[in-house]
Length: 304
Image 1 (cartoon, one colour):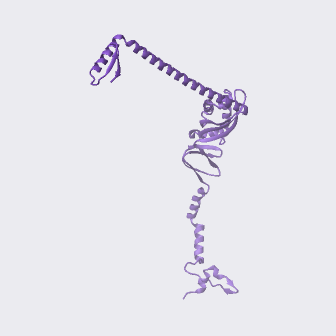
Image 2 (image 1 turned 90 degrees about the horizontal axis):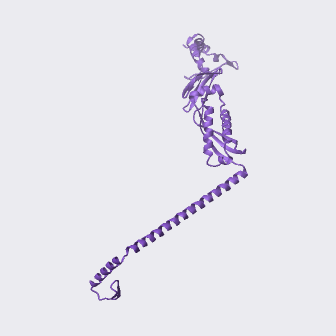
Image 3 (image 1 turned 135 degrees about the vertical axis):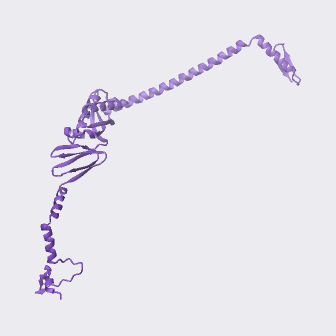
């Protein structure tokens, strides 16, 4: 027979009493209650088994490790205790300890740096301009860039542009920045910046002066001058066309006159006599009756 008292003793929860009565616990096959023998076996396993110790030791490094993914179009490098470690990575995985190191990464795609500046002109005026500087980071020199300038390198580009634009724009008049010489100014600034940033890891692709705001009086004067120049060019074109037309008419009249002179000089008396004979010959062969009055040189038809 089953000893119910011993069975109850195996389950600690059944040692409780409610209102001085033994606790009755209704359970099924999926019971959540464990006998003392099972509880002691599990406890002994965790206390004495080396497997758990090994598992814990294996898990500890992962608790203090993180990963950074460098995507295509990016460059990254690990910084440990303030020092850059290894070579820059353009794609892949960087494993690091977040307590002692971090990953510095940035885009190597084309960046657009927008600036609003006042540019000096040759005559000493201040010209407002919206500037767009297109640049990218050279991944092979990313480590050198961080060592020399740190992560905040855009102010360096701005400072170099200010210096280059001041030197170049001071050689041009304000109206030149608003006219066809704008591209010359952009190219000169671009070349100057390339020289100053050479080897830094920052590569300038282009410099664009998108908007130029001249002083009010100068802008009006330039517009009036351009309008006058356009009118003068238009009048010059019309005059040129009229001169060409007059020359054409003169050439045409001269040709007609010369043709008449040649014809007149070619109609000699002998030629006229031969043509008169031909005319009489054709008239004599005609079946129609005709009355002709002639002096023997030129026939005149009077009546058929």
